[in-house]
Image (cartoon, rainbow over all chains, first blue to last red; front, side):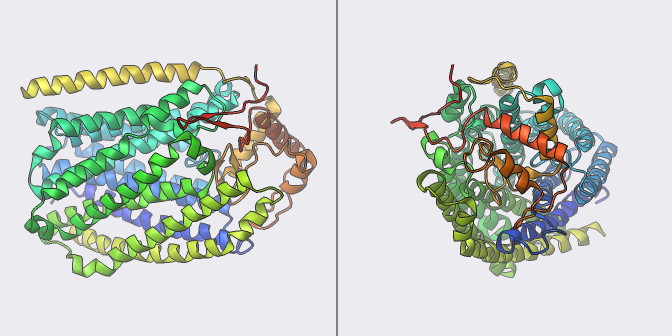
Length: 439
Length: 144
């Protein structure tokens, strides 16, 4: 294999995943030992480091997977290898710039995009190059696109749009309107997540159809119906993040109406796929298959939480609590990370011609899902306690409420250590195989 | 047949994007629900300090932000807190809060920011009314 840019994207993604989970662990330490190392690794530095790094994992792994699939599995002639390499170099240099910005405290951005806003320009250029390369390659070579091509295409376009939208606050007259500014900021974040979900869910459908060796599950009417439903959700369903903000009621009504849809999409597709899979297919792709099944489980669990917290009457009590964190951890780790792990295991099977067997990573797999389940449960518990404190207790200060959660936070930290260990073992195994393929 | 299918998909995408454009225009050009608060120059400076020091990592406004510290939406009008409390807390370095070195002018800007966000609404919205269909009527500040 001559061009190894896609593999380098995947190696970079696994390195930032390892870094990101360790930042997360250090950040969670502040809940247990508030005074410990707070001057050298304060939470206001560790949290942006953690969030930016784990978002980079999702973006880099999805990008590397898509490049690999179109050029190495589909064997389409990529429009430009130069653009692909430039994309990689831009992302790596910008990543270094972001860490410089975060480590040296030059943070002028906002939540999730805390680094200096200037660095978003090269990120947007990177996405633009990806878009040009992707659309030009696909447009020339594919007729009757299966749904994953549509999903990746719309994911790329909307990613650029919503990333730009997240910086409307740089316009002074816009920023002065506090409520509108807050609404648009969270609108962009919600849809930004929807955009990367398009990339990641597209990858899930792609890997499934390849394992099954059947493209029909990616071309049927039903799958397109769900795709358009997901796209509508991406565009209009973000507002359950901001039900509580005093804005135009129609924005909130609309969100209530559409925000229930997206989760039904993936679970339906995965369920149908699993039902029709033969025993041989399951065995042949054991790790990729196992992680897709893990994603199936996490979709189901998060579907319940997502549906509940999208009901305004429930959202009133859960918003601003750890239940929201449980939801975001459940989706980014349980769903996105499981799908991306499945994707990389599938890619390794293509590179080496042999699969990493489930037996080899059985313990780590169960440790990953088991500790995440406990982590998820602890967050739901902490969120319920906080919601109760906000609305139903009087004369209890915030610090008293936090102290009452002390043992919950210890459990949160311990499960975090187990989760980080499992993720590290899986990521190192994948890294080793990818590095071998690079030689 | 295949050509028709692709054509239909393009039509659906075009319709959805058109709706999205109208939707975005309405949101970007909309005024706030009831109270059209524009941040003053001092409050904007306070907001810049809030951003540059990543205060949102630990604190929340309208429940959005981190959960290590308390929500600060209505800290200014809280009868037990208010301006003096905010200023005393800023450089205190209590518990996990880093020890900041804000100048008096910066403290004033942060207080101006908290004062103005406080005037936009309530969080938690204790007087919100839950409807049988799951909807919630929020209590707005200075309702017209």
